[in-house]
Image (cartoon, rainbow, N blue to C red; front, side, top):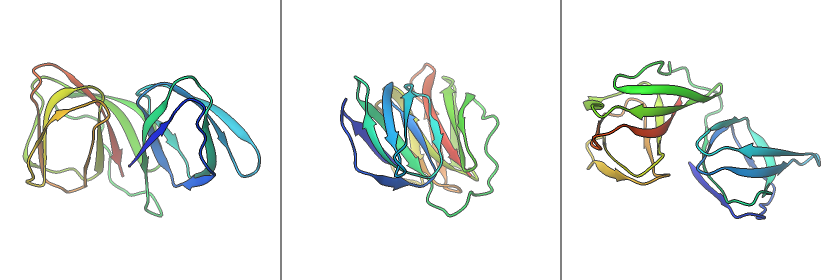
Length: 180
């Protein structure tokens, strides 16, 4: 998981990424030049993830706002085979991005949402907070993360015991990238 932060006008060097999902934390406009001399402008909308196949590029922020986001890269040579969720109790789900390796969902945890201690899933998860909130998440018996700020990230590996609970008393929004 990489934190991406380019100020308006900032440019990077040519570099490569494997398949990934980008989660913009603000709206921005980027230009992506490739080694063959071509370029593509992309509008990125805040909180709308994008699936990006493996690429070599030189990004430039050509907008007036910071290009701020998280890049979740997939390092395995081929996609996994885990079934990804179509529903989760106590949560509403909306698919925002889909690729052969993962799906990104906008999730809203109801005030009553909870997963008991020992909960496991057959897929990896990257949890991205969309606002400051009170959501308890304990992974593998470690102390729970109780307070979240916008852009905070937690990884939950497949088969890893965890427990979570909405402690805010109101719906909580976040993005989950579920990885096959």
